[in-house]
Length: 313
Image (cartoon, rainbow, N blue to C red; front, top):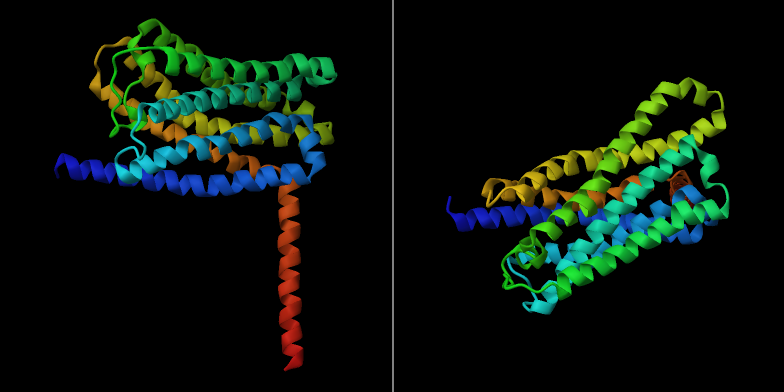
């Protein structure tokens, strides 16, 4: 098999996988956001707020970034072949990736506090300090950081319209900033997600009998824990190998094998992100109950129409 046919096969597989995940993820995200606007109780519950923000950001990522990636793998080249479009694509990819990972890290820390130290997030002042300010800072930081590194960080790299994200970015050529980007912007929050979730799981197992005495709190906390662990497992499968490979690639020179593995794992991170809205929807009891109610009423309507037709005959 020659290189061209292999490239076509690889593009077809990646295109198919992205489409397979993007369609249900978009539907779940839209349905989730729709119900957020329709169910005030769900929207106003503090434990749901970071999750709502996360799903909205992932929906925007699918529409503005992953859709371009899908088009790229379908064609084998970038549809709009200009430097400005490449900058836009690189900017959206880097910004959404950073914001989503850090929102997941904040989500993990908040779940830990809500389960074990709920008094720390009781007052509006505490919520402002530990919830709203971190979210605002993370969004502001990544929007500003990537504006600088993508649009104002000059280098001699030419855009390659037949490569994902138009090839390498200028930041990749500057060792110090590139290492900071991977270590702080990506690997540090991944560490928080994975080990924070593991810590919650171990601590819950350790004191579960004590927690089960209060059935109401146990039920509420267990739902939050399952929601967190469902997302954490997906992130662990993808991001731990990607983190290890990226570290090796960052601190070694021209390791083509590691770069290839890193490229495939980075692709898998798109799939990882698109699973989050599905998990969020499946583990949102208020939305699921409403969906079941609609389905039951639809079945009853169909049954009544069918019985009416039979009675006429």
